[in-house]
Every structure is written in C-alpha cells, then in structure tokens.
Length: 187
Image 1: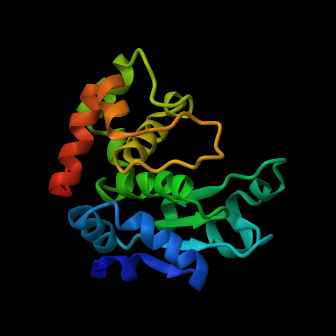
Image 2 (image 1 turned 120 degrees about the vertical axis):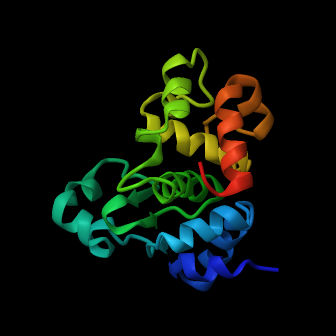
C-alpha cells in the first residue's frame, strides 16, 4: 500500500518516473514521509534535455549557469522552493536529494544539520567517510547518510555502495542519529 503522503510529495513527474520515485519514497517510512509532506516538499522530474532553469524559478533567476556546466548535477534540492528537481531519475539520485529534503523538513528556516549539535559533532569528528561526497559539506554528509539508511545504490555508479551496516560501521554516531530520525520523524 502506498502511503498517502507520497502523492502529496510527487508534484510533477511522468508515469515512468513516478514509479521510480515512488519506489524510492516507499523506503522512507511514514513518520518522515508525513513530515516532508507537512513541510510542503515537492518532487519534480525534468524531461530529457530540459534545463533546471526552465523548471525552477530560483535556478532560473539566481543560478542559470548551472545548466551550462560540463556535467550538470543529476538532481538538486532548492531550499527556496522546498523542491527536489531530478534530471536523472535513479534510486541513488532520488534518495540523495530526498536526504536534503529531509534535512530541510526537520529544520527551522533551513537545514536541520546546520544547527543539530550531534550531527555537527559527528561530522567534525569523522575519520572515515561513507562516500567521498559525504566529506564535502555537512548537508552532503546528511544526504549520504540518509541514502545509506534506505540503501539506495546504482549499480553503474562509481561511488561506494552504501548500506545501513556500512553507515553503522563507519560512523556509529551518525547511524544512531539517522535511525532515531527514521523512527520518530523528528530530531
């Protein structure tokens, strides 16, 4: 059975991508799905070749150069719009961007990770990283931990496979924080 919040989250997708996005969302669990829907999170997929700037008013106004990068991102979470934009619809990309959406949905006027003392401490004290991208910024750290917790990987990706067990082994403090968030839907 599909959780009712999923329909509220999926704003603009075609039938093919809606199934892939729904499949990833079903891994999240009711507390977080409900929280994201309550915070107005939306998920949109871009048509093949469609630039982010054509769909996102914020990107169009403030970051149109994003579309001209040699390798534009596979997905974006635009905080100002509370919207996930997916250029590449895959389990890995969808899960990662949903991690940003969750971080935002749990925050007050921005990402929860910017103010959560446990996450800030875990990030500052990390000696190993779930993926190289997790080491770049605290919000990417949270998004990759979220992706690991729901175990979304793409077989063709060069990134390390992530799982709950890998998260628990590499970063037990962050694993405990993410597990609590998934169980309660809050921080």
